[in-house]
Amino acid sequence: MSDSRREIAEIKARLEKVEAQLGFLFRSMGITAGQAPPGHASAAVLEMAARGDKIAAIKAFREETGASLKDAKEFIESLIR
Image 1 (tube, rainbow, N blue to C red):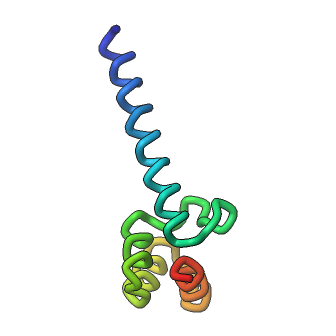
Image 2 (image 1 turned 90 degrees about the vertical axis):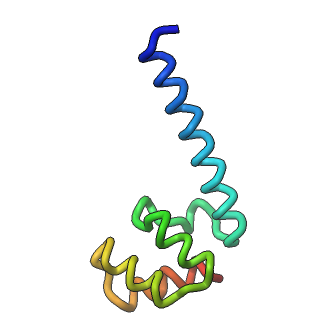
């Protein structure tokens, strides 16, 4: 196998692992893929929400996305539920 093909195979394997971990996180938090943010919340924000650190998660989400306080609060609370 050439180096580029091996590298592509390794990237695909890592992506599958990340997708599986994200699926586990969503199931653990009780949210469906339809409720999940469309790529807006970083892993750090999701981790804060999973820990129940609502204020830090809201602040970080607002900094990352420019969301209003109201929208960020609703979003993070939906993750925590």
